[in-house]
Image (cartoon, rainbow, N blue to C red; front, side, top):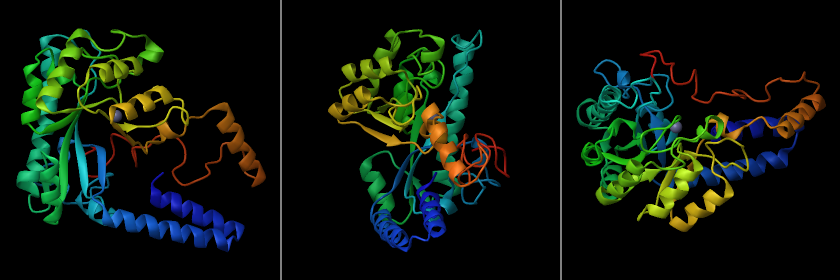
Length: 330
Ligand SMILES: [Zn+2]
């Protein structure tokens, strides 16, 4: 749930209960939060894209009905965004052959090109691509929005380590070594259910870590397995990030970071940007289901009744990786 809808839900609950004090307190918190929001350069570290939304006719200068676009960034006070070069993990028979790698590489290049098109041709007066933190500050000061590029899944680099530098030159400033499903570089969190391939990083993945450190791409651990993250921390010479993770103690999902991982991340000087994707925040433990049903009973609602607008699973806004009126992208 977004901060705004959480505030709205809290206000609605306070109104139902007739608790004026709670509303006043809520207003004060909202005011304080808004003050901070307006003062700082706000950054979302993980926004998926579809190249279909980066064309002359259909692009981010319009509110496409998707989660992030320029009108929404203006309205919501979002100053900077990591747009994502995401390539899903192919698990077919030729996934780890030159043909499989080539398909993945072409898909990645299409997304790199789309982001460059937005910031260099379609809307260069509204948003600029930052390659350094100094770039970000300069673009922000000019009144434009700031774009960064992150790569989700190292699969498209194939087995060619020189592509790390190539991706850097294309603007990538973070990359994860796996998504859901193991890559040639690293185990994925999905191994907890399906079994592991490398028991952490592959030999090539270890070389890629060194190369990313050398060229200056942050390592993102939001999808790789726990063991992969711990091995990454032992190898990396720079702080790492978890661009869109949550806390395992709160939601027991293999994508989330447990206390050992969080403390190791802290020691490394890295950061986790918490995700607002409901599957990783609201896991239906027996305890949670029982608590929600007790709440429903208290209000005379049948078991399973949604307790807030948009409650339940999902989380990629209206319709997930798939719905928008322009193209069917994100
Ligand atoms: Zn992801």
